[in-house]
Amino acid sequence: MLLVATVSLVPASVIVKSGFYFTGIDKWFHAAMYCVLAILLFLAWRQSRFFTIKAITVLAFTLAFVYSLILEILQATIVSIDRSFEWLDLLANALGAISGIFIMILLFIKKK
View 1 (cartoon, rainbow, N blue to C red):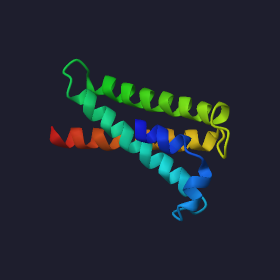
View 2 (view 1 turned 135 degrees about the horizontal axis):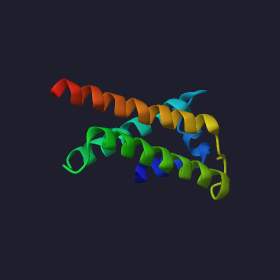
View 3 (view 1 turned 45 degrees about the vertical axis):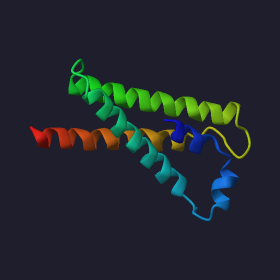
View 4 (view 1 turned 30 degrees about the vertical axis):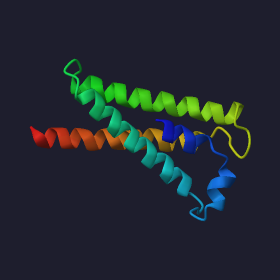
């Protein structure tokens, strides 16, 4: 989660200067980061015997989405250098989290 926060809050000019940037790639990065985050959350809670798959799915998505929302708000309020709140980033984050959970559900169903 710290890596996601760091990448989300670093000034955008640092990412552009890295040379690994083209228009629209940031949305793919958002989706990929939250896909991985949701998978890790799913796996962490999957180890617990206290939660059903349905509960894990809801928890993983909710935590990833709320974390995403908090980081977007921080971009708009605290980290004002080259950063701002973007609805499309939030959408990409949500789609990434949903993708990660979907992958885990497919893998879990295959194991049965």
